[in-house]
Image 1 (cartoon, one colour):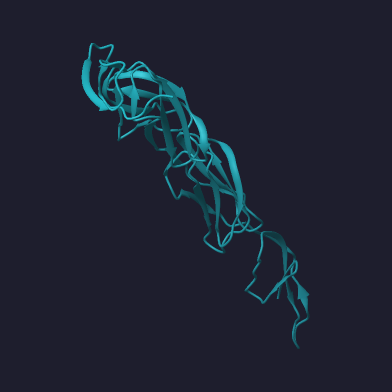
Image 2 (tube, rainbow, N blue to C red; image 1 turned 45 degrees about the vertical axis):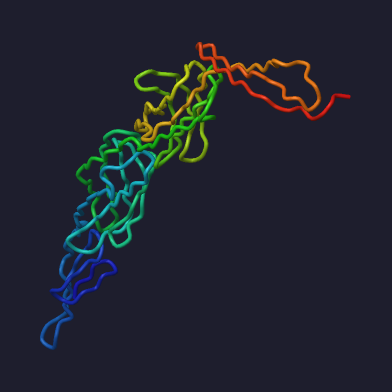
Length: 288
Protein backbone atom coordinates (compact mmCIF):
# COMPACT_ATOMS: atom_id res chain seq x y z
CA UNK A 1 0.00 0.00 0.00
CA UNK A 2 1.17 3.52 -0.84
CA UNK A 3 0.76 6.33 1.66
CA UNK A 4 0.89 9.89 0.28
CA UNK A 5 -0.27 12.47 2.81
CA UNK A 6 -4.04 11.98 2.99
CA UNK A 7 -3.98 10.01 -0.28
CA UNK A 8 -4.01 6.26 0.06
CA UNK A 9 -3.80 4.06 -2.98
CA UNK A 10 -3.38 0.38 -3.55
CA UNK A 11 0.01 -1.02 -4.35
CA UNK A 12 1.10 0.03 -7.83
CA UNK A 13 -1.75 2.51 -8.27
CA UNK A 14 -0.71 5.67 -6.49
CA UNK A 15 -2.66 8.83 -7.36
CA UNK A 16 -2.53 12.46 -6.19
CA UNK A 17 -5.48 14.72 -6.91
CA UNK A 18 -3.64 18.00 -6.47
CA UNK A 19 -0.22 19.49 -6.92
CA UNK A 20 1.75 18.17 -3.98
CA UNK A 21 5.12 17.05 -2.74
CA UNK A 22 4.44 13.59 -1.35
CA UNK A 23 6.43 11.18 0.79
CA UNK A 24 5.69 7.71 -0.54
CA UNK A 25 6.53 4.52 1.30
CA UNK A 26 5.65 0.90 0.71
CA UNK A 27 4.58 -1.14 3.71
CA UNK A 28 4.76 -4.90 3.54
CA UNK A 29 2.64 -6.59 6.22
CA UNK A 30 4.47 -9.84 5.70
CA UNK A 31 3.00 -13.34 5.66
CA UNK A 32 3.34 -16.62 7.56
CA UNK A 33 6.94 -17.06 6.43
CA UNK A 34 8.09 -13.46 6.29
CA UNK A 35 8.27 -10.63 8.71
CA UNK A 36 6.75 -7.25 8.07
CA UNK A 37 8.94 -4.43 6.73
CA UNK A 38 8.68 -0.82 5.61
CA UNK A 39 10.60 0.71 2.72
CA UNK A 40 12.41 4.01 2.96
CA UNK A 41 10.40 7.08 1.92
CA UNK A 42 10.66 8.33 -1.67
CA UNK A 43 9.83 11.94 -2.54
CA UNK A 44 7.23 12.28 -5.37
CA UNK A 45 6.21 15.64 -6.84
CA UNK A 46 2.88 16.17 -8.65
CA UNK A 47 3.03 19.21 -10.95
CA UNK A 48 0.13 21.43 -11.93
CA UNK A 49 -1.26 20.89 -15.41
CA UNK A 50 -0.54 23.38 -18.15
CA UNK A 51 -3.42 25.48 -19.55
CA UNK A 52 -4.27 27.17 -22.82
CA UNK A 53 -6.08 30.54 -22.96
CA UNK A 54 -7.82 32.19 -25.89
CA UNK A 55 -9.84 35.40 -26.19
CA UNK A 56 -12.41 36.35 -28.85
CA UNK A 57 -14.66 39.34 -29.57
CA UNK A 58 -18.32 39.01 -30.53
CA UNK A 59 -17.90 42.18 -32.69
CA UNK A 60 -14.34 42.48 -34.01
CA UNK A 61 -15.41 45.72 -35.72
CA UNK A 62 -17.76 47.83 -33.61
CA UNK A 63 -19.08 51.39 -33.44
CA UNK A 64 -18.17 53.84 -30.73
CA UNK A 65 -20.41 53.34 -27.70
CA UNK A 66 -21.49 49.87 -28.84
CA UNK A 67 -21.18 47.08 -26.26
CA UNK A 68 -18.48 44.53 -27.10
CA UNK A 69 -18.10 41.18 -25.31
CA UNK A 70 -14.68 39.59 -24.93
CA UNK A 71 -14.97 35.86 -24.19
CA UNK A 72 -12.08 34.07 -22.47
CA UNK A 73 -11.77 30.30 -22.87
CA UNK A 74 -9.30 28.28 -20.77
CA UNK A 75 -8.65 24.60 -21.44
CA UNK A 76 -6.38 21.87 -20.17
CA UNK A 77 -5.43 18.34 -21.17
CA UNK A 78 -6.94 17.02 -17.93
CA UNK A 79 -9.68 18.67 -15.89
CA UNK A 80 -11.52 21.89 -16.75
CA UNK A 81 -9.65 24.85 -15.24
CA UNK A 82 -11.31 27.02 -12.61
CA UNK A 83 -10.40 30.41 -11.21
CA UNK A 84 -10.18 33.85 -12.80
CA UNK A 85 -9.06 35.50 -16.02
CA UNK A 86 -8.11 39.10 -16.79
CA UNK A 87 -8.81 40.87 -20.10
CA UNK A 88 -6.31 43.52 -21.20
CA UNK A 89 -6.87 46.26 -23.80
CA UNK A 90 -3.74 48.00 -25.07
CA UNK A 91 -1.85 46.57 -22.10
CA UNK A 92 -4.27 47.91 -19.49
CA UNK A 93 -6.63 45.76 -17.45
CA UNK A 94 -10.19 46.05 -18.71
CA UNK A 95 -11.77 43.67 -16.21
CA UNK A 96 -11.64 40.33 -14.39
CA UNK A 97 -14.09 37.47 -14.77
CA UNK A 98 -14.64 34.14 -13.01
CA UNK A 99 -14.48 30.96 -15.09
CA UNK A 100 -17.52 28.72 -15.35
CA UNK A 101 -16.95 25.53 -17.33
CA UNK A 102 -13.69 27.12 -18.51
CA UNK A 103 -15.39 30.23 -19.97
CA UNK A 104 -16.03 33.81 -18.79
CA UNK A 105 -16.86 37.19 -20.36
CA UNK A 106 -15.85 40.83 -19.95
CA UNK A 107 -18.11 43.39 -21.66
CA UNK A 108 -17.44 47.07 -22.37
CA UNK A 109 -18.94 49.93 -24.36
CA UNK A 110 -16.31 52.53 -23.55
CA UNK A 111 -13.53 51.81 -26.06
CA UNK A 112 -12.28 54.84 -27.95
CA UNK A 113 -12.36 55.11 -31.75
CA UNK A 114 -9.45 53.30 -33.41
CA UNK A 115 -7.71 49.90 -33.32
CA UNK A 116 -7.05 48.19 -29.98
CA UNK A 117 -4.91 45.21 -28.99
CA UNK A 118 -6.76 42.76 -26.75
CA UNK A 119 -5.36 39.80 -24.77
CA UNK A 120 -6.34 37.65 -21.80
CA UNK A 121 -4.45 36.06 -18.91
CA UNK A 122 -5.58 33.05 -16.90
CA UNK A 123 -4.26 33.48 -13.37
CA UNK A 124 -4.07 29.76 -12.62
CA UNK A 125 -5.07 27.75 -9.54
CA UNK A 126 -3.70 24.86 -7.48
CA UNK A 127 -4.13 22.36 -10.30
CA UNK A 128 -3.50 24.46 -13.42
CA UNK A 129 -0.71 26.79 -14.41
CA UNK A 130 -1.38 30.36 -15.52
CA UNK A 131 -1.33 31.10 -19.26
CA UNK A 132 -1.60 34.05 -21.66
CA UNK A 133 -3.64 34.23 -24.85
CA UNK A 134 -2.46 35.46 -28.21
CA UNK A 135 -3.51 39.05 -29.00
CA UNK A 136 -6.45 39.99 -31.20
CA UNK A 137 -7.39 43.36 -32.74
CA UNK A 138 -10.59 45.20 -31.86
CA UNK A 139 -11.48 48.00 -34.30
CA UNK A 140 -13.82 50.75 -33.10
CA UNK A 141 -15.37 52.98 -35.77
CA UNK A 142 -17.10 56.32 -35.39
CA UNK A 143 -20.81 56.04 -34.64
CA UNK A 144 -22.95 56.56 -37.74
CA UNK A 145 -25.19 59.64 -37.92
CA UNK A 146 -28.21 60.93 -39.84
CA UNK A 147 -28.75 64.64 -40.50
CA UNK A 148 -32.00 66.49 -41.31
CA UNK A 149 -32.84 70.18 -41.83
CA UNK A 150 -36.02 72.19 -41.26
CA UNK A 151 -36.89 75.90 -41.45
CA UNK A 152 -39.04 78.12 -39.26
CA UNK A 153 -41.03 79.26 -42.35
CA UNK A 154 -41.29 77.76 -45.81
CA UNK A 155 -42.54 81.10 -47.18
CA UNK A 156 -40.98 84.35 -46.05
CA UNK A 157 -40.68 87.94 -47.16
CA UNK A 158 -37.37 89.28 -48.32
CA UNK A 159 -35.42 90.68 -45.38
CA UNK A 160 -37.17 88.59 -42.73
CA UNK A 161 -35.14 86.11 -40.66
CA UNK A 162 -35.68 82.37 -41.08
CA UNK A 163 -34.07 79.94 -38.61
CA UNK A 164 -32.80 76.71 -40.15
CA UNK A 165 -32.57 73.87 -37.62
CA UNK A 166 -30.07 71.06 -38.25
CA UNK A 167 -30.79 67.84 -36.33
CA UNK A 168 -28.24 65.03 -36.03
CA UNK A 169 -29.21 61.53 -34.83
CA UNK A 170 -26.77 58.77 -33.90
CA UNK A 171 -26.90 55.02 -33.40
CA UNK A 172 -25.12 55.36 -30.04
CA UNK A 173 -24.57 58.43 -27.89
CA UNK A 174 -25.45 62.10 -28.32
CA UNK A 175 -23.63 63.68 -31.29
CA UNK A 176 -21.27 66.56 -30.59
CA UNK A 177 -19.60 69.02 -32.93
CA UNK A 178 -20.61 71.60 -35.51
CA UNK A 179 -23.39 71.73 -38.12
CA UNK A 180 -23.58 73.91 -41.23
CA UNK A 181 -26.32 75.15 -43.56
CA UNK A 182 -25.54 75.33 -47.30
CA UNK A 183 -27.42 76.73 -50.27
CA UNK A 184 -25.74 74.80 -53.05
CA UNK A 185 -22.02 75.28 -52.46
CA UNK A 186 -22.51 78.49 -50.48
CA UNK A 187 -22.16 78.31 -46.71
CA UNK A 188 -24.98 80.28 -45.07
CA UNK A 189 -23.97 79.70 -41.45
CA UNK A 190 -22.88 77.22 -38.80
CA UNK A 191 -23.83 76.35 -35.22
CA UNK A 192 -22.71 74.15 -32.32
CA UNK A 193 -24.86 71.11 -31.58
CA UNK A 194 -26.70 70.96 -28.26
CA UNK A 195 -28.11 67.72 -26.74
CA UNK A 196 -31.77 66.94 -27.35
CA UNK A 197 -31.87 63.31 -26.20
CA UNK A 198 -29.56 60.35 -25.59
CA UNK A 199 -29.03 59.93 -29.34
CA UNK A 200 -29.98 63.34 -30.80
CA UNK A 201 -28.55 66.86 -30.95
CA UNK A 202 -29.56 69.98 -32.88
CA UNK A 203 -28.83 73.68 -33.41
CA UNK A 204 -30.23 76.59 -35.40
CA UNK A 205 -28.76 78.93 -38.02
CA UNK A 206 -30.64 82.25 -38.54
CA UNK A 207 -30.44 83.80 -42.03
CA UNK A 208 -32.08 86.90 -43.55
CA UNK A 209 -30.10 87.77 -46.69
CA UNK A 210 -31.97 85.87 -49.40
CA UNK A 211 -33.37 87.79 -52.35
CA UNK A 212 -36.74 86.87 -53.82
CA UNK A 213 -36.83 83.36 -55.26
CA UNK A 214 -36.85 79.66 -54.42
CA UNK A 215 -33.87 78.22 -52.55
CA UNK A 216 -32.89 74.73 -51.42
CA UNK A 217 -31.02 74.44 -48.13
CA UNK A 218 -28.85 71.46 -47.07
CA UNK A 219 -27.88 70.55 -43.51
CA UNK A 220 -24.36 69.19 -43.00
CA UNK A 221 -22.80 67.61 -39.90
CA UNK A 222 -19.03 67.92 -40.08
CA UNK A 223 -18.41 64.95 -37.76
CA UNK A 224 -16.31 64.78 -34.58
CA UNK A 225 -13.97 62.38 -32.79
CA UNK A 226 -16.63 59.77 -32.04
CA UNK A 227 -19.29 60.57 -34.65
CA UNK A 228 -19.12 60.15 -38.42
CA UNK A 229 -20.11 63.09 -40.69
CA UNK A 230 -23.41 63.13 -42.60
CA UNK A 231 -25.65 65.47 -44.57
CA UNK A 232 -29.37 65.80 -45.14
CA UNK A 233 -30.76 63.76 -48.02
CA UNK A 234 -33.88 65.96 -48.36
CA UNK A 235 -33.27 69.69 -48.77
CA UNK A 236 -35.49 72.36 -47.23
CA UNK A 237 -37.31 74.41 -49.89
CA UNK A 238 -37.31 78.11 -49.02
CA UNK A 239 -39.58 80.50 -50.94
CA UNK A 240 -38.71 84.20 -50.52
CA UNK A 241 -41.26 86.81 -51.58
CA UNK A 242 -40.39 90.39 -52.49
CA UNK A 243 -41.92 92.97 -50.11
CA UNK A 244 -44.76 95.06 -51.53
CA UNK A 245 -46.56 98.30 -50.76
CA UNK A 246 -50.27 98.71 -51.41
CA UNK A 247 -52.08 102.05 -51.79
CA UNK A 248 -55.77 102.77 -52.34
CA UNK A 249 -57.00 106.07 -53.81
CA UNK A 250 -60.53 107.22 -54.58
CA UNK A 251 -61.27 108.94 -57.89
CA UNK A 252 -64.67 110.16 -56.72
CA UNK A 253 -64.43 111.63 -53.28
CA UNK A 254 -66.82 112.53 -51.88
CA UNK A 255 -69.60 110.55 -53.49
CA UNK A 256 -73.39 110.59 -53.05
CA UNK A 257 -75.38 108.00 -51.20
CA UNK A 258 -75.95 104.89 -53.31
CA UNK A 259 -73.65 106.26 -56.03
CA UNK A 260 -70.87 104.13 -57.47
CA UNK A 261 -67.47 105.24 -56.21
CA UNK A 262 -64.30 104.52 -58.13
CA UNK A 263 -61.03 103.42 -56.49
CA UNK A 264 -57.56 102.56 -57.72
CA UNK A 265 -55.43 99.96 -55.90
CA UNK A 266 -51.70 100.26 -56.62
CA UNK A 267 -49.20 97.57 -55.60
CA UNK A 268 -45.50 98.36 -55.88
CA UNK A 269 -42.24 96.59 -55.02
CA UNK A 270 -38.67 97.83 -54.41
CA UNK A 271 -37.67 95.64 -57.34
CA UNK A 272 -39.60 97.93 -59.70
CA UNK A 273 -42.73 95.82 -59.85
CA UNK A 274 -46.00 97.80 -60.03
CA UNK A 275 -49.59 96.77 -60.58
CA UNK A 276 -52.72 98.96 -60.78
CA UNK A 277 -56.18 97.56 -60.10
CA UNK A 278 -59.14 99.91 -60.78
CA UNK A 279 -62.36 99.00 -59.03
CA UNK A 280 -65.80 100.38 -58.22
CA UNK A 281 -68.18 99.87 -55.36
CA UNK A 282 -71.55 101.33 -54.32
CA UNK A 283 -71.56 102.87 -50.88
CA UNK A 284 -74.88 102.23 -49.12
CA UNK A 285 -74.15 103.72 -45.71
CA UNK A 286 -73.68 107.29 -44.54
CA UNK A 287 -71.12 108.13 -41.87
CA UNK A 288 -72.73 109.51 -38.72
